[in-house]
Image (tube, rainbow, N blue to C red; front, side, top):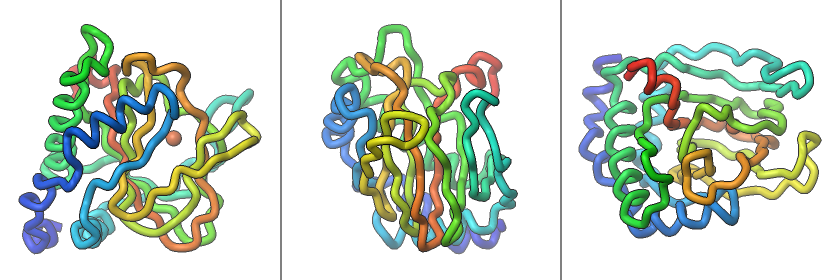
Length: 221
Ligand SMILES: [Fe+2]
């Protein structure tokens, strides 16, 4: 693992994001209307290097059913929620978080007295032919904005109107793109969007970056 981190030697790449502050500010300001948007974030070769890095992490299958008995969420993917604190992904999360902080504060896009940083990382792998994840909302403890970085593969990441997936509209996002989803604490955020993932035909790897207000209160990370 250590060798792979050294071989990647990619922290410098990760700190130089093609994603600019103006572009990010524009995307964030659109979330009050659209719920979800995608923006280019990383070059393809950096994604390839990250694929190698994340594949060395320990993955395990997600629970088949999550959510509540009233609103079950069906899941078919692998995940790693224990990214070591020394892993390059945490440096990336910090760099990206600073860019977000600057964009959010420069245009007062965040509600007053609201903090923001990426303190929750999850890597997910959806193999070809998997069922993805059924319509759900991300937990309310995730605040301001949820960011999903696509590293590889395909699949339709959609926003939808109800838990049956009615009126699903795809938010096109390929490797290198960052999907942004509004969350409480973003100015004029409105409701948390219902969303789903389906139709994966090539292994899709994503990195989910979130601000978990409960972790923050507990002093973790
Ligand atoms: Fe989600």
